[in-house]
Amino acid sequence: MDELDLKLLEELQKDGRASIADIARRLRVPRTTLSDRLEKLKERGVIKGFKAIVDPEKVGYKFVAFVLVKARRGGLRGGRSNQEVLAEKIARDCERDPGLPWVEEVHIITGNYDLLIKVWASELNQLTRFLTFYMPSHEDVVETHTLLVLKTPYEAGGLRLRPKPSG
Image 1 (spheres, one colour):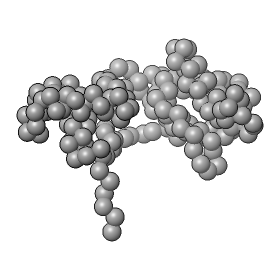
Image 2 (cartoon, rainbow, N blue to C red):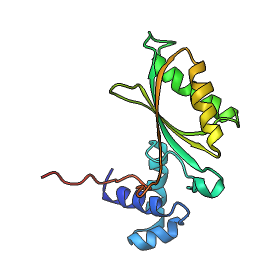
Image 3 (cartoon, rainbow, N blue to C red):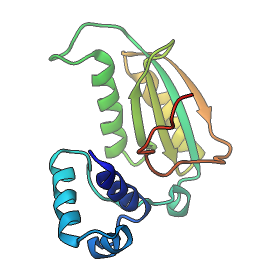
Image 4 (cartoon, rainbow, N blue to C red):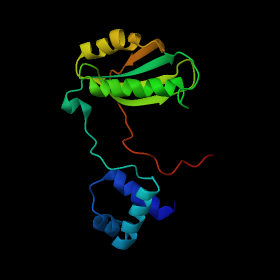
């Protein structure tokens, strides 16, 4: 990936709806060059897709929490770890059941816990149901620890494409 690819990615992160012609004009390169670059970035999986970034609060989500999960340790299940299987099940169940919160992210992590889950709830009872009934119903969930977000003073909103120089 060269400097032009990085500039294209930065422009798309600023405005994913910008036309290739507009970006080409700003970067002072031919539109066909950028169009080719964009296709190659998509083919290589650098660009995973395009989506609208929606403010969860504006569509009714009032609470965000991070849930740390300690999972039962076990062997592999079909070549996947117990933690990975559990993470996917939780995300799938929450997607299907409107009484459960929306799972935005699930990460397998290091440390005293195995999973970090970011959830959004429209009502406090939705989060309560998730924590007091749903999570303990899993035999693979050993322990949870929940951090309710009070305020988010900063979110990056895009990936830093150029690491800061060290030193």
